[in-house]
Length: 354
Image (cartoon, rainbow, N blue to C red; front, top):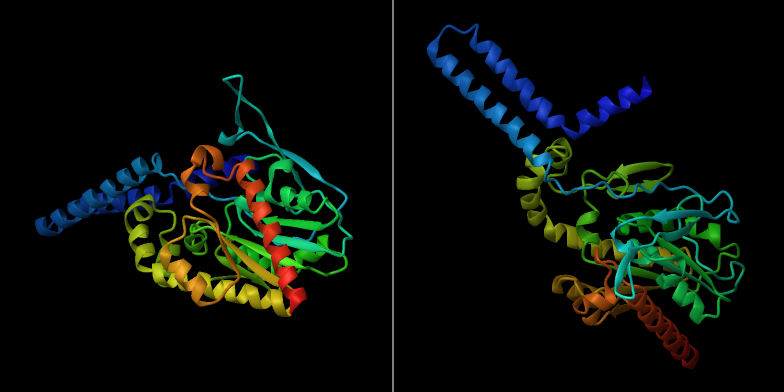
């Protein structure tokens, strides 16, 4: 019975506006059989035609809708740091080429019980480094030994504590939630953190205001989620499940809100920097990927963040630095880890001199 109810719920939620438009078209058609006045009947038939057409359009567009709900991440502390779960990714990135023959291999993810990814290192080290971001940090499509956190830990001879807080499909709201709720302390018993790194890609900016993924449009505080406000937000929520809305009207609204989204991202980075400085007594470095609009770069420099701007070849040389779906390759992560290692070494030297 529960499975039947779940199936019905799934069908309704995926075709909600098909049913709504079809319902109204049926109501208008039935009313035409009771209305005698010709003028009213023509109006009702017109309304019937419009809503039936909308229902048909909704149904057709449902086959072409590319939206997929990201991995839902909930704020949950690690219950057992010694229990590592092994999962396998069978996605598009698993294609490997050996002797010019293409074959598929499962990609292995080692994760804690709250889904944070494991990185080899020394958890009780006096030196801890936390990586924040999305799937670029998590290492989607790559084995454990090919993530940016693994390469960074390797440069430290695995004597440092390197924490991977990359959450696939999410953005800065989720990173703020992680910091505000002390999830990093689950993997840092001595609560001493040398440095935080946040990986910024341009897609993070609109992700903060997605309508079908509640966790990324929410700030989690005091045990509850509160939705982040945005211009025309209520309108977006009401019509979130309409394929017509998402195809036609949502891009227009997001374009209209673009400046608001950008300002929110910059303000959030400032908040994260403040949290890291005041709460964790640490420093933040932002790693900006090449495909970040000039508006963002200008604002990042204006606010005087500590930013590393990755060079264009990480984007232009796609076969070397990007997996089939656009995520960074092992080669990209290895180079970036070296850049970060050099950066903190230079920072430490400069601080010592001062």
